[in-house]
Image 1 (cartoon, protein in one colour):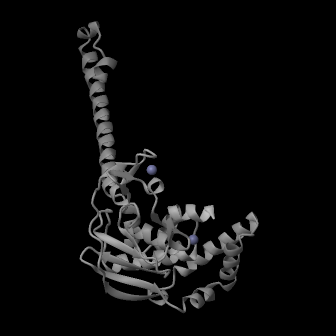
Image 2 (tube, helix red, strand yellow):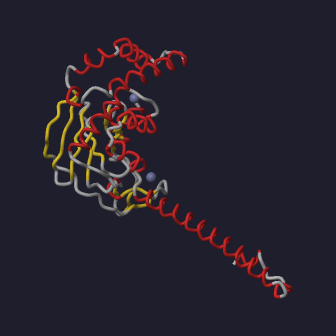
Image 3 (cartoon, protein in one colour):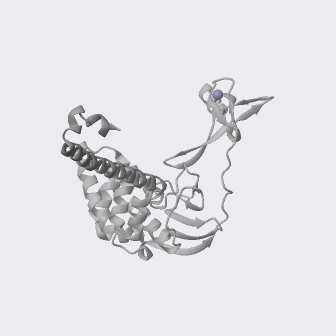
Length: 290
Ligand SMILES: [Zn+2]
Ligand SMILES: [Zn+2]
């Protein structure tokens, strides 16, 4: 259409048949170029659509190619830094994905990660396995152990737990870094310069850790795990006090009304650095009145 607009046939062109011919050739070339451009655009769209359906292709490729450093870099996208803990998560998750031959995870709960800690380790697990809080494929056991299981829907799985002599194994690789890291994290009194230097040392150290075989770091065992059922979509209620929507399973029923836990009182679990603790809103109010 645009070609016709760009190249209208001039009224005198009948007198110059060669000009007609020339116009068609030029228009033909331009049409051809346009078609090619369109195919390219459509081609790109197809590639984009493919990428949309294969969202984790970058991770899966790195698992396939045993690119642990690449997986650690990807983990740092959600973890914010490179560290030994997240490196251990990468090693464990990579080993489990390979052993159970999980080639992809579409986040539809066909494969589940059961983590037993909420430290740096867990972010390596989430990135490499694709099991996360948001897609309901991450089950959290508040055990305080650097351990995790990768489990298929039939309950067959593999569990990796850090060996008790692991501290020495990692310290052997860089004792000074480990000690200083502990001091900085526990005391929180490092200057920005000290912290940056520490992070850099830690970053270099954790790439060395990646070269340690999984069997040396973890006790590895086959397990049979009882998994929660597939998730279901539940109704929500609007809390009459705050007007916010609350999931049915978390609503506090009083008479015929459903309140959120904040307004209706009661207790809820809170996950923080020390693990899960139960927060009781009513009890907290009583405590603060004392
Ligand atoms: Zn970390
Ligand atoms: Zn409310």
